[in-house]
Image (cartoon, rainbow, N blue to C red; front, side, top):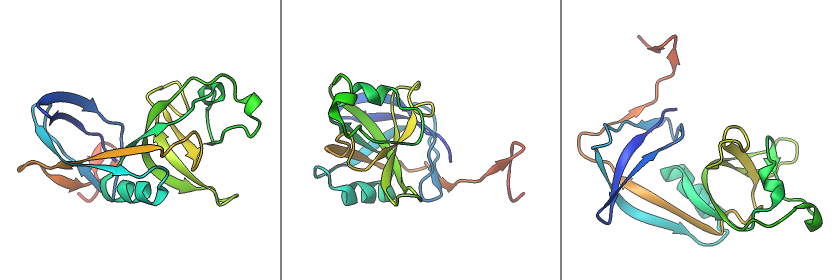
Amino acid sequence: GGSVSVGVEHGGNKHSHQSHQFQKANDVAKVGDMNTKVKVAQITSCPTFDYACIAEELFRYGPVSSYAGDIYEEFYAYADGVFRESTDVSLRGDNHGGHVIKIIGWGREESSGEYYWIIVNSWLNWGQEGVGKIAVGQVGLGAGVEAAVMEIPAGVEVLPSVPEQNGEADGK
């Protein structure tokens, strides 16, 4: 994987964003410094709870943002495994309202066969340094999903990721 730091210009406003490490289809975008302008080619939205659309966007273009409906007290205590809301509503704790989460992938539990989303939360003290798994259909994830498809500027290369060993790239 790799990380990307870019300056994005959309609607005349310039925004800076430092992404978490990711790997998609063995390619990592190599972008220059914060002065590199990246254009938004299109904004994609998935219909509410259209999990096939979300998976397609993840596969084709990478991470998407999703609104997560009601976040209850129990969500704050998540540390590891696949998060599921308590079936007994009285055990969930107080409702703290909605939240936006970045979905970066999906997986399937071997034991149950249940699917889950791999997400990045803005709270670094949540899950595994902000990264966790939420069972598909939980916390309203998928209620509002949007993704920006970026136009890669001329001269910016998309290179295959190369695993590093001892600070040097393989294959030398």
